[in-house]
Every structure is written in C-alpha cells, then in structure tokens.
Length: 430
Image (cartoon, rainbow, N blue to C red; front, side, top):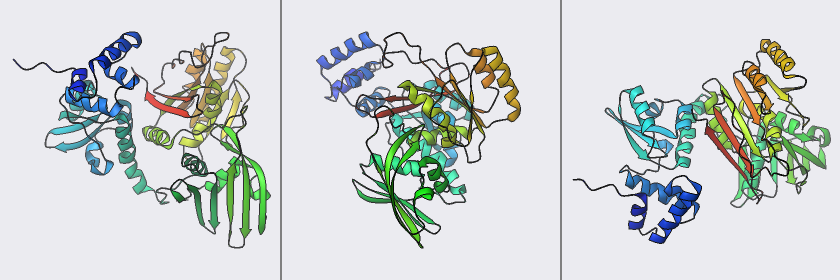
C-alpha cells in the first residue's frame, strides 16, 4: 500500500517552518474565517506566500518553477488567448512531443488542465508558480508581437501620466520634460539616480489636456516661466508648481507636486500591469468591466477616463452619469441619466445607431432595464457599481456590490488607511 499523501501542515512542519501550535492556531482561524488552511497560515503571518506555494507543490508532487518570458516558447503560449491565460491564472510554457507543461497558480486547477488537454489533444502536466510571476509572464509574452509590429518604435516609451507615477513610486520629489525639436525625453531623479524615458507619441497633446494652465499658455517663446497648475489624471486632479526654460533650440519643464488637498484627493491611474492585462483582453474584441471602489467616489471619478487609458486614439466613447463630477477627457461625450427608467431605456435604444466604441455607465441597484439597454450600445462597456449604504455605515465594512449579468471582469480599487492604493483585476466566475 502506498504511503498516504501528507497534508500541507505536515509538509511545512517537516520543513521546520511551522509548529504544532501554529497548526492549531491556523485551524482555529480557518474554522472562524473559512477558506483554506494554507491561506490561514499566511494570514496569521506564520509563513510567507512563497513558502506556502513551495509546500503545495511538494504536497501535490508537481514542480515549483520561476517562469521567465524569455524561456517561454511563443508558439506554445499561442495555444491559448491572453484573456484565457489571465482568467485562468495559467499559461502553457513548454511542449515536448505530446506533453504540454502548463504553469498554474494553484495545484487545484485540474479542470483548467483538462480543458486545455481537450482543446489541444495533448497530455497536460502542471507546474506551480506564483500568481504574480504568471501574470507578469503573460503580459510580457503576449506583448512581444505587439512590440515587433509597432511602427513608431515606442518600446519603453511612456506617457506624461506614466512618468509622473514612476517618479512618485521611486521617491522623486519632481519630474521633468526635455524637448529639443522632434526629440522629447522625460526624466526624474529618484532613489537610484536620474532615470530617462522616451515619451510616447501624442505626449504633448496629453500634457495640454492634463495641465491647466498649460505650457502653451504660460511659457514664453524665449525666457523663463513659473506658475501653479492643476494636473488632471485618472479622474482626479492634483496641484503642481511648474518651472520652464525656453530657447530657440527647445525647452525644459520641471513639475513639483504640492501637498494634496484632503477634500479633493488625487485619484491615481491603475498600475501599468493592470492596464497591460486589460489591453490584452481587448485584443479579443470586447470587454465588459465592472469597477468597484472604496471610497466610492474614486470609482465614478475614474470611470470616464478608462476609455482614454485603454482604447486607441480617435475612439468614440459615451459616458452615462447620474451626477456632476470632474470634466472627462475631450474624447468622451457625457450624457445625464435622468427621468423615469422607461424613458431612459428608450433614449439608450436610440443611441445604438451611433455605434460608439465604448460606454461608461454608473449603475445603481435595480436599474436592470438601463443595464440591458447599455449592453447594446458598444462592444466595450465600463460600469461603476455603487454599494447600498445603511445609515451610519462605513464603506469599508460593506459587502462589495455584485456585478450584473454580462460582466466578464471586475476591477477592485481601495484606498488603505496608510494612504496606499490597492488594485486587483479578476475574472467573473461562472
């Protein structure tokens, strides 16, 4: 008779990572909170996520790997779509004869392996890796072809918004632009010294839209200028001090953020890795994305900016709103949602003839008819889900709003007590 498979607790105990007392604490946490035993150990701080994954690989007798995009066979990865890979947390990374290695973020994803086996006719073998490493490889592998086709040669190029976010993450106090004729660079001085980036095509138009007053309004053709401006980004705004130097050869701009107004907090853009994943999903031709947020106003401020972040320039997008907020980008047409639901439904049906590229809508509970009419307006839908508020209740303690039928992905964003933003993109199960 073969030896019984050890539990994850026994494996970690054999490794010297947990004690019997730790196991009992985790079991009590699991009884109280639910979920898996291993996640209880992580939640209690007994083990790190990587140690848990290593132990799970041992428990299920599958290899634990550290995947790299450069080692993945593009033809093998191409057996699945980017959306399938992201939704399943899995990617085929290697093939030898009729055997296919599938990197997964959980050893329990046997149904995913069976689905791929049926699709390809190959024998699928699992290899375990962290969720973060798999998603990173998916982004890099499926972006390679796009980079090769990029006639503008914009590899590693950034927008002014991305430059500002990179500077902030690297602890830079200021960030700048250096323009000489057709050559434009962004830069900042952070923890690892001065970093320089090429600017993505259209950066100057984006800056003119985002900064008020803009350099065109305040910087002389030759000389120096200094002014205070609002920098609009991701549905919110922040205040920056701008300094400029201009000569016949070109100009320099230096931006220094001021302390944010607590009554009007800066609303950040989603992290670039999430934007990359959403762009990969959009390669399939459509997307219905729900946004949930805490605080709630972050969601409705961010919503009308998603088309500009994800769709090509020249998109035609509609924003259906129940409230007044910061002005959306110029490419977004905002219409109010007002009047009886039946009248609104008729109005939305009339809008189908305009064939918009995307629609962003704020959806209160119960507006099922409005939602059904919205789904017919465009192939790409962004919807902000409002919570139901009890008198005196805080947003933090509420159950997240459920997504209406048809939503395929959910973007959750939350501001933590320390001021940091957390983002997650997950597929809707079912």
